[in-house]
Image (cartoon, rainbow, N blue to C red; front, side):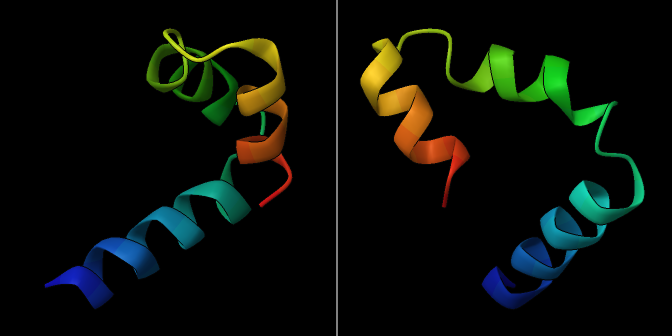
Length: 42
């Protein structure tokens, strides 16, 4: 199941990079800017 989630997230990011910006902002809303930057670069 975890492999399915990882593959889904990867395809979602590759297929629609602009559309994932609101998702990224919503998921990392509580993070400080340094942590958010680190997550974005992973």
